[in-house]
Image 1 (cartoon, rainbow, N blue to C red):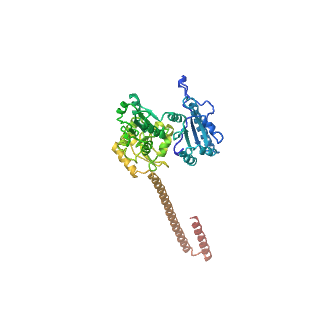
Image 2: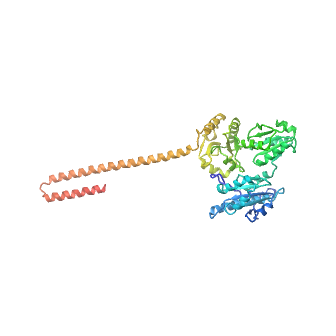
Image 3: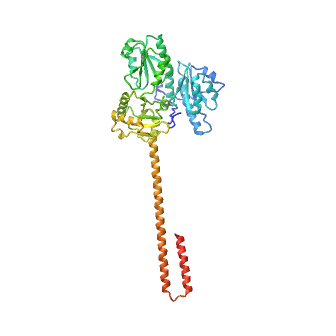
Length: 469
């Protein structure tokens, strides 16, 4: 998909372990083909059969054996999802495949809603895989992990009503316990209220990515401190909401406000939204925090992150992505290798969204977690650019330069050694010549021919010595 350094974890089954009771047996693929291969000839008849259609718009695998195997695994995951959805009574849900190369015409024809036409043509060029869910009059893009359980859970959310009604104190408690997602709640006179209808229409635009709630109960509204026709907007992990100004609202006013505020200060990366969040970077970078909520140190660090987010909720440039390592066990080795960190303890760093260069806060293996003030100071440095993941590239370049300098020094040393050897050789040659001259002077009785022969021999020896060196 879009996260080049992420390994897509495809679950072919939900388990398959027999626990001895039918109610606890996880589904396994039964071998029946339920996934449709859509073409120009059959796509209309296939889609008419279902209330909801899930379409996997995929790259053509080509002749690559690896790509073919990967596609087979993805298709099996979709087959398992289709098998589970086949047993759903409320809606008929179908699953289909569209080959980006072979069925390009089908993709264009499915762009009957004007707003998705450019999306479909762009996806064929820029994105390797995408899943679209066609409902009555909406097309919802799934930006999560291609795993059977995650996809089925998301589709169940799609099939729910866009607005959930809170009618009593227990349902109110359930609303209050939702903290990881953006949520809105409004108080209206009744289902027939034109202001509720505008609210419900706005909810359809963001369903199921953003959770919408409403109440018609004055007691619930009082507990939420809501006035009639008023809507509160809650960021993830925030106790206090923002009252959307200008009540009563039109659908367009609600949509505009949500679009202007849909990047939370602290948000959680989850299997069903991982690619959506990763694409929503700030100036090409993410502030990433790893914290295992079930671990004492991780929980403590998460509470620090929540406080930092609450103190800086008005900063539009700050958005911290929290990742719980427990949610992505197959990615842990990849992340540790890519980022050079130990995920057995909390971590926070700045990551380049494109090439995964990163800089991480030194927290002494989680033994001494930063205070709220210390973390805010570090984040300010990150937002100002003083802490920059691109510095990681500069360090690599410096290392390369140091290696080059070392090589140059070695070459210079070798040259100096060679020069010294040559000087020593010349001195040896001069000494040999002096010795030969002394021998010639001592041999006065030898004739001139012998002297000439000796000189010639000495010259030859000198030449041989020079050749040796």
